[in-house]
Amino acid sequence: MGRKRGTRTARGILPTQRDVLRDVMLTAGKYGAWMTLRELARLTRYGETSISAQLRHLRKAKCGGYVLEKRVRKPEVVSSEEHFVVWEYQLTPRLAQRRIVRRRRAKSRRRRRP
Picture 1 (cartoon, rainbow, N blue to C red):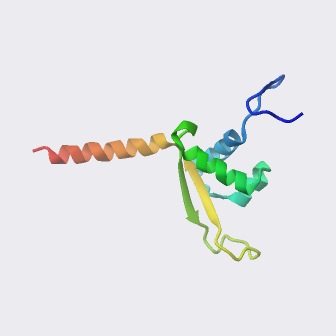
Picture 2: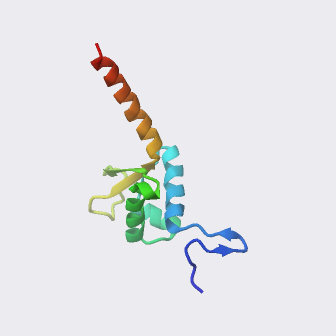
């Protein structure tokens, strides 16, 4: 009896992996936290490769069109057992980004007009 995506149960609708990751990342983003794939895997118990794929999907317009920022984690934060580059991610809603862009465009239009 496998869990089907979006099936109804007596308790309600089961969230998809993408829904769980979106909620975790948005909650972390509210506090300014950046998370690695390993941290997300430990928290959600999903595989790192599938987490990476779901984060890519969240950038698509049909899946929410979120802004996914990515940066290299500082060496002081990386554990001594990891001797390679560790990436960390932060997810923010695109709405906040669009408002900023619209304001910039509006200001530039005002300047152009004589």
